[in-house]
Amino acid sequence: MNITQRVRYKLKLRFDRINNERLKTNLLNALPFWVCAFVSGAVAVLYAKLFSWAELGTHLIYERINWLFFIITPICFVLAWWLVAKFSPYARGSGIPQVSAAIELSVPKHNAKVNSLLSIRVSFIKILSSLIMVFGGGAIGREGPTIQISASIFKSINDLLPAWYPKISKRNMIVTGAAAGLAAAFNTPLGGIVFAIEELTKTHFSFFKSALLTGVIIAGLSALYFLGPYLYLGYPQLDGVAATIFFPVILVSIITGYGGSAMGAIILYVLEKKSYFQKNYQKVTYVAICGLIIALFAVFIDSKTFGSGKEIMVTTLFTNQKHLEWYVPFLRVGSSIISFSTGAAGGIFAPSLSAGASIGAVFSGWLHLSNPETNLVILCGMTGFLTGITRSPFTSSILVLEMTNSHNVIFYIMLTALLSNLIATSLSRHSFYDNLKDQYIKEISTSTSPSVEGAVI
Image (cartoon, rainbow, N blue to C red):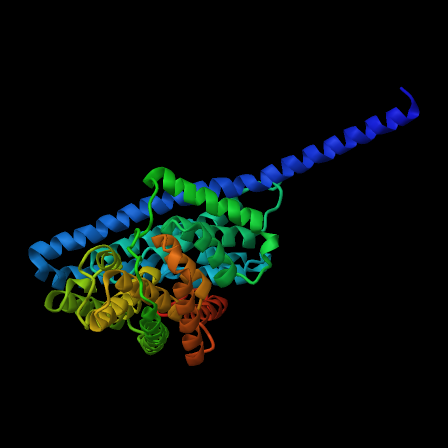
């Protein structure tokens, strides 16, 4: 072997060693994301099943002895609030502002603060409190809580990695966990990715795209493995929509943009006034009264007051019962405000979608639209209301498109998101979630024993 051959041989060995080291490092970096994503998907499925059973239990009791809710609802509301207040104050609400705050605080000097926002303890209380709340008839959802639970799983497993393990950015783990949680909750992988980019972080996508994509894919596949192929809602009929539908879409976009923004503003106002309650008996009394009001609405007006509102979306989109009474949107918005202001755990995504769907169904009935046109207006109502409260037009439109496979009306959906976002932005520069995130950061930075009367969602 001559000198040239020896040099080539040594260079080849060095390059092979470098490539093997890179492969090993990349594999070690990817492995925690894969494990976390699978666990998150499995937990999301279990949580969805428990949540569905709790809602089913509510309906069964309502059909048989509805007056029992004058007892059940106040008790469940107080118990759900007490669990959060006693054991994990940052388990309150939907969890998305907590995740956003954790992302902003994810530097070593704030590890204790991040641990307060995201942990297994927080996740356990989150699940238990929200299940009790929805069983009692609370107008809450599980999607926001799933995001905080998934982010907590990713963060907790990252904390368990040994010292010799390649360092993985905690921020990237939290962002990926949140996106995976949304993808598993709605079975919307694109929605999870867009949510991470639009709502959770301003970091350039290229810094964490591989981890984010694999996390979303594995969490989604885990949910599919346990549940099988499914859409969160289904396939609404959208054929034969007339060109004149453009005008009802514009109208619903404006109304839901105002409605979503107004609901967020009212919740913030109620929370501000409620913060004056300092005595425990005042807090318990307020929560019990909230439960009693929900029970009164349901028993004397309509059972559509109860729960996440998914049944409203399914009924109006996939049956011939397309139209709703004029008061249903007010019930949905009012019950959501009351439920979220208690301080218990519960999300805002599904209640916002159902409020928007009810607005679309009411206006479709007034305008005597056909079934396909009604379905489109309902989908636009869902998109508009969710955009109005979250200020995430891309996430809202992608979620609605993916959960109903309604890509043939994508331009109407995206137009609704755009108009609703413009309306909401004209009313307030800061989004609902941004306001709550700032409250969490301020609260956790000034107090080691946070009060449950702060931001709720």
